[in-house]
Amino acid sequence: MFTIAGTTFDSPFVLAPLAGYTDLPFRLLCRRYGAGLVVTEMISCHGLLYGQEKTRRMLVSDVAEQPVSIQLFGSDPDIMGKAAAILNDFSPSFIDINMGCPVRKVTKRGAGSALMKDITLAEKILTAVVSNSNVPVTVKTRAGVDKQQITAIDFAKMSENAGAAAIAIHGRTWAQGFTGSADWEIVSKVKNSVTIPVIGNGDVRSYDEAIARMDETGCDGIMIGRAALGNPWVFQKKGKPENILEILPAVMEHLKLMEQHLDTRRQLAYIRNHTGRYFCNFEGSSQIRRAIHDCPDFRTLQDLITSLLQ
Ligand SMILES: Cc1cc2nc3c(=O)[nH]c(=O)nc-3n(C[C@H](O)[C@H](O)[C@H](O)COP(=O)(O)O)c2cc1C
Image 1: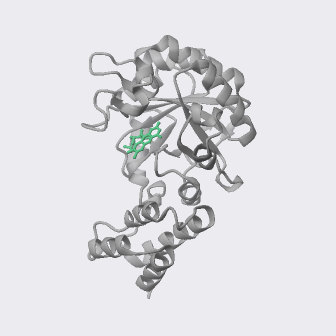
Image 2: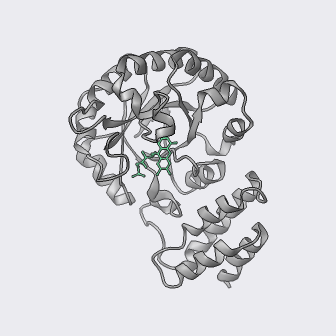
């Protein structure tokens, strides 16, 4: 059974934080389809402190998605600590600290992957967040800086000592970005080095693959990101249906959740992008994607999906 700091999950599979995707509707959908834990998009500690409207919108939650983890990023221990204190008002189940994002906009300020180069600073950040948070704090990081500097084991030990309740390891280095493939041996090594739960991440495309990775590495949970887009069935043994008539009800359900929680006039391009991802690898899918792309408004998009059901 997958447990973090006393919370037991109904599945060992975690929806990864995906900036631009893991908003409330998608998190709710993935929980309904079997993810045991879901993680928000990364939230800037500065945005939180300055009460930015966009940041506040990203924090909207619903009890139905719990357990949910809010992911924070930043490089200043003081500001990260203050941001964690603000998050107490939002009652997340966990706070996760992003120590693995390779995107330049994040690393140039010393956050995300850049923290793997400065374990002392990473420790200060973690300590500040742990001491200001009412909920358990977890860390998400990568295998290391590059092939020569594989830091995950030291990082995991530091995290455990500084009070992290669990650690997620994406088996790529900072230098790799999203190229090449994830190294799962490092996940095994980390699992053998700490006693806190270890969540493996990287390139998992199906339920069976996730189970195989757990067996092979002994890790406690599996985090799935890209493979969940347009495919919440990735959290289920039976996987994505091959028949479009079985796919459409999930698309309708996702659209309904988006209608409930998003501004469907302002976020149409975003909604079309999420919706289009359901349609790939079967006959006629490129035409459907094109038709979705051409929908001028949310209602037309809903009607299009409804008409495909008939
Ligand atoms: C579009 C996109 C956005 C991402 N946003 C975040 C993020 O906000 N925080 C984070 O820690 N990782 C982020 N990641 C990394 C994923 O959480 C995950 O570690 C990575 O995609 C590898 O897992 P996968 O192969 O299952 O997708 C992002 C990845 C992608 C592709």
